[in-house]
Length: 120
Image (cartoon, rainbow, N blue to C red; front, side, top):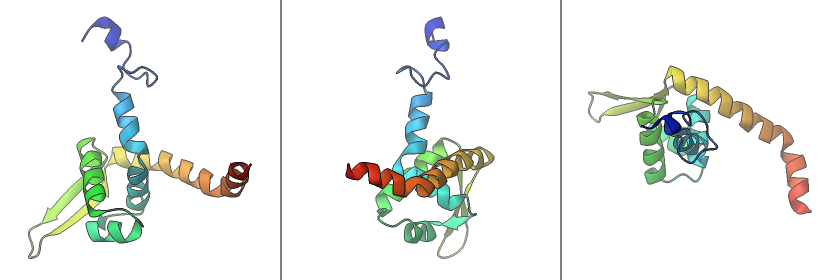
């Protein structure tokens, strides 16, 4: 990596910065909702699917894999028949979920005002 690219690490406004990819992963609609659910504790895939209205099995699977790859979620498979799989936030994921939850709460608290502006 060149010196100029190294200086861009942690600078989300740069198209060269890897933080943009992480920002995209964390702020996708489905990731926000998954993080919100998992902030309440360990959950199985079927629980997440029921709680997150409108998410397809494919999108939920994709989102969980991305969050796991980025280190925000752990996936635990129990050797049972049928196999039981649980998802939970890592320490890093808990930290990210706290930030996301603040944004979600802010949106919910200001929704009426936001909707009024959308009408104009």
